[in-house]
Length: 334
Image 1: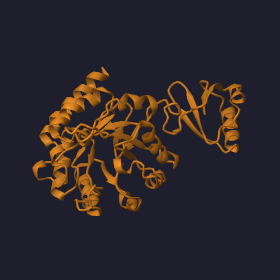
Image 2: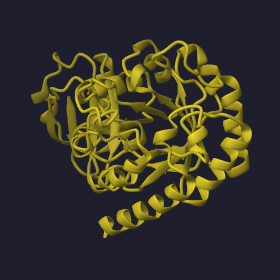
Image 3: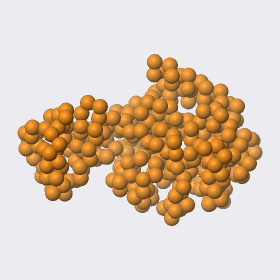
Image 4: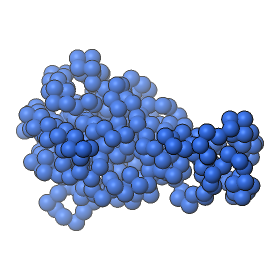
């Protein structure tokens, strides 16, 4: 249920309303916008008399929400959410460029790439330390050592770092990571999502390869229901019947999600198209569709990368792309 308040509501009456709702075991989330204030009611609201609330002097309107996701719903929070991560601002009309290798391989590798992408305008360094793989025999990442090397790169460049978590038992290792990424394979790992909801660190939630929009938003709801509202959605493609691309990049997800949710929406074109030459072809379309940012794989020596070299851009190619995307974003903003 949503309660839309009139402008400048009487504070004593508002406090009384909130106290009464809490007595009914209803969680109340207040969202203060530029022109109005909204109360989002979460819980068993079936017994709450909407007409009774509508009759209050401070109330403009009362609406019942049919969608199962409440915290992530734009109706609860009309203004776009802006998430701060180590100095980077994600959402709210800005364009965030997140870049780095698929996997951390060495100190020299991650530091050199971090310096390069920062010089090109990236505001977040991405890099995999734990790598869930289809085959148990494939490289699984450097683990704790990889996290330590990401921190070293942050010390060298000042860039906040984003890394993928594979299991809730790893959470203590991410205490000093700026953004925790949940990969597509773990989008419905509800035990992990619940654990991430108990802390306040930003979480970038990748879309599952076969997940619909509501399933994706319900996974975000698991995190937000635990108290952590710092959730970033990232579209990285869904399964397709087309062998020419690893996944199908669903650009329609961007405008649709902007209607459904207030959460920032990023796009990972590298993961979706799986070929470095295709990334600059498709990335501008993501910006034009309204993405809040992009996560791009960059490697200084793709031919010898431990993982996903063919989809990793060289630093000079990323530099050219970053300039193009920044110019496009500035043009679209007018």
